[in-house]
Length: 220
Image (cartoon, rainbow, N blue to C red; front, side, top):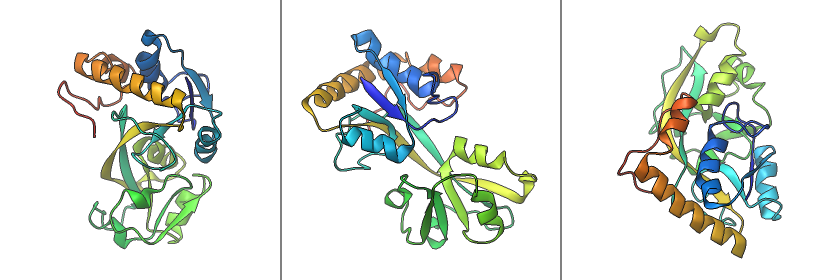
């Protein structure tokens, strides 16, 4: 199975290491399907699946793209944070739509956060802190790991505050093909078994990340 992902540190590293790659190998390889891990920027990863040069991309939100097939089971949960200046009032999920927001192109948080209208998409994360400092946007939206990476660039981290606003399940987004339909069915049946048995928990513990399931978890 050809899986393509943006490179997220310790999650989907280019060398095939990382939490998500370990989880997905555990899903497919005991069933006789070898995982081929590919790396590409997020928007390009979506395009590779669309052109059937990959079977699925890693880390999609549910029904993010209506051209793709989505499984029932998520494999992880994204912890979504809003990064802003510390002297601003902390946002909530209910209030986030009142602010000027920014996020990386392709992530489409407007579809998953309520009442969002005023936003801009950026190509890279390197310019986020100056945008906040010069009042070009109120908050930057991203998963916790990426927000932490942005904060590492700050000479004075105390100037900024990250606020948790949402939890979004993460999926594989499969291409629309008979091959992918079969892979999706295999993925769902394996995930059901692994969640019930707790076999994925040691992988999350090894990478020091919160385990997103319980023994009675259900697909979202």
